[in-house]
Structures are given as C-alpha cells and as structure tokens.
Image 1 (cartoon, helix red, strand yellow):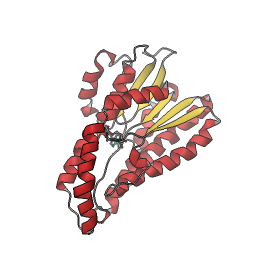
Image 2: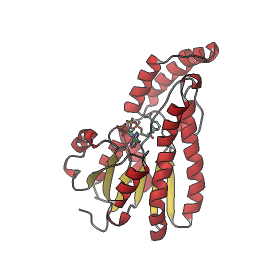
Image 3: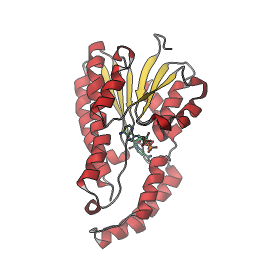
Length: 249
Ligand code: NDP
C-alpha cells in the first residue's frame, strides 16, 4: 500500500469536522505524497470519512481505532503501524466545554483536559522516541485562538488549549536538535459539529452563581458579536485542511 516516497501521516479525531477534512485532503493529494492513517475512537462513525475519501480509501487512506484518552488504545494503535513509523502526527481530536465555572463539576473539567491536553501529551510521548531515533518527524497540534486569549464562559476549554500551547512550546525546543518539528495551528471559528454543539449548549445554558453583569455581557454583547464574526469570517474545515497541508509541506 505505501511506497517509500510516501510520508506516513497519522491524524486523530477523523470522524467529523477538521480531522475528517485533513485526512481526505492529504489522501487525495495530487502528487500522492501521503499515506494517511485516519483514526477515530469509534469506527462505527467511519461512513462519512469513507464516503468523502472515495477511491483513496484503502489506497492512500486507511483507518485505525484510537481513543486519545486511553493509554492502552494509543499504544496499541502505534504498535500496529509497521515499524511504528510515523512521519507526521496531526493531533486534532478535541472537545469543547461552555458555561460558568460554578455550573461545571471538576470531573467534567478533567474530561476536557484528558482529551485536549493529556490526549496530545500521550500521543507525543508515544511517537517521540521513534522520531528522535530516526532524526526526522513533524508533530502538528490543532490549538485555537482560544489557546492565545481567554474568552468568557470558555474558561476550561481555553485553559486546556493554553496548557497544550505551553507544553508544545517547551517540547519544540527539545525536539529541534533531533530534527523533529512541532507546529501549532490556531484557528478562529470553523463551521463544524463543534460549533453546532457549542450553539446548542448556549441555548440550554444556565447561569447559576454567575453575576448578572457577566451574564448580560455574554448574552447581549459577546454572543451576538461572535455570531457575526462566525458568519462573516468563519472558516470551513477545507480552509483548515489546506492550511495544515501547507504547514507540513
Ligand atoms: P468536531 O467536534 O467536528 O470533531 C472533534 C473530533 O475529535 C471528533 O472526531 C471526535 O470524535 C474527536 N474526539 C473527541 N474526543 C476524542 C478522543 N478521546 N479520542 C479520539 N478522538 C476524539 O470538532 P472540530 O473538527 O471543529 O475540532 C477539531 C479540533 O479543532 C479540536 O481540537 C478543536 O478544539 C479545534 N478547533 C475547532 C474550532 C471550531 O470553531 N470548530 C476552532 C479552533 C480550534 P467523536 O466523533 O468520537 O466524538
């Protein structure tokens, strides 16, 4: 299936949105430069990806199960790859969480960190030794503008992306001397299921404990302006996939 000129690219979270589109874009690369290992935690969700990949499925794109929150799943996925050889790792899987901190349990917060922060750490820990040994590799991390700036009622999601940015900036310096690159992509709003879920969450949101001024600011200023920004400047998963392709070229 692979030839020696192909770069092996592993992508996390390919059941929908940005991950799905990156997988398809790279698998359909006109110069056939990539062999894509598209992963998702539940392979029963594979139909959308398989359909979008078309002829590339089974040729330049294969599928593997991978839950970034599970040590066992991460190890078994990487061990199932021939010689554990991955040229490019794209850490895309992520979850959001919206609401006043007073209404969110510590357990719910930990789940966000388990995916957005430890999920990335787990993947990097697993692929890094082989990349360092081969003295080549590229790790890409899907952060967010919210990895650079705090946003009201997005405290925990923002914190998880900030933590990941800090971890990756520190790692990048250490990997550089092994010729392993680490890049971060920080998209603004992108039209995916992530956005749809966020809007559903906003509609159902309650504000126990939050002060009236903050709630008013969130509902009357932040939300309407975010919706305007989304409509005027929201990007598509294709935009982010094309950007990712440029980053790894
Ligand atoms: P989607 O909700 O469409 O996709 C998220 C993907 O992550 C899904 O495939 C989901 O799988 C997967 N995932 C969640 N938890 C795990 C896990 N434990 N193991 C493996 N996969 C998991 O959202 P997007 O495509 O929009 O988001 C992709 C990335 O882009 C995220 O990291 C997000 O933070 C970031 N981002 C998104 C923005 C946006 O506006 N949409 C803006 C900036 C950054 P499943 O189907 O099983 O839930």
